[in-house]
Length: 458
Image (tube, rainbow, N blue to C red; front, side, top):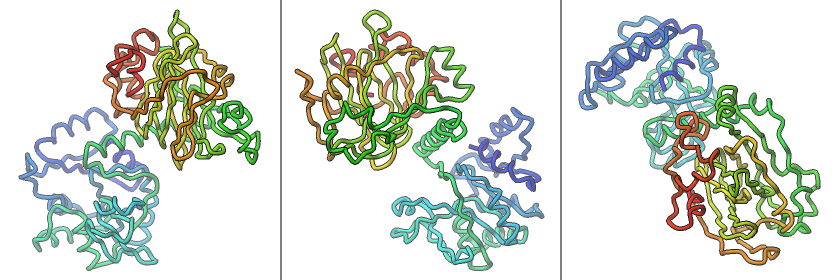
């Protein structure tokens, strides 16, 4: 977390020194962190406490630190994660010559209840802060990223002497607004308050997805575009789609999409990472979907398995398992952002977007695996069609198929659910050995019955 804050601070050339405020319990860890990289230059100041109960409070600690500073200050709480550059905010601070705090639009009134909502006038001056309002009137919140001119620093001591709340920085900003102009600057990009383990994992997911889907990386690869005319043979009712142009791009697949570091790792293990991007749309009364494919056996009777992860949106994966040419199991797996889904060996599958926004899915698979669309084209799609309102209709071109099993994505014992696939592969490659050795898939199965079917629910 502090590494990311350091990177943002380093973008501002006018910053001449950095102070890290911590406590006695963790100060040595911060010293070790600083000494591990000569480029990190900072002073560690411990607040004299070993536990939460002994802490003097954030504002009291700031008052003590800034009492010896005769300069403007940039103050950032260590639990801030943000992707926006602070340089535009710094330029606004220079122009205003007044206190400036970073604001962020959480775009959710329920979420705004957890923070200090902010009202600003036409010039950007903060008129009021409402700490954790029960009924917020705005989704614009204040973050703990402050730029204070040096004249404001003595106000911190004044605030503490008055006996006000010593721990909540937002309370101090509200107090300051009543005494002098304080302006807000709305951050772009993403901002998260890492106060819980769930928020920490969410930030990890944000970073991972931004890296995988970075514009520079996407621009470096030419995607395979699947057009509407190619999906016509597998649709529930192609006649109802006459208004869709045959050349309309339905979805695109970026094959072997990864950075140089990940590419070397994937090559070493004989794997590749693909990304599929599918916008929301309807194909008549049917939800938009992929053409569907089945992996061809490469090691005797074994067809390669796959692992999918939902990077954005919500997916349905219809998975049909074959025994020779007969379908012996059909599952419909629901997976949300961050979920992982294992596709067992000897299975065909279709990916469906039932959500109102685009679906982005990444997958790991054997690098030189072969797949075929023939079983789906010959029988006009998968064993079932998923229509509007989540209505399942059996495909009459299959003479006999099992009832579809409805499955929610659930954690797998072998793959860390909190990490992206590429990160998980890097940290624990042994967990993915089944991709190269399909007969080992049963080792990571979760269902109690059929060995292959057990791996569907992950």
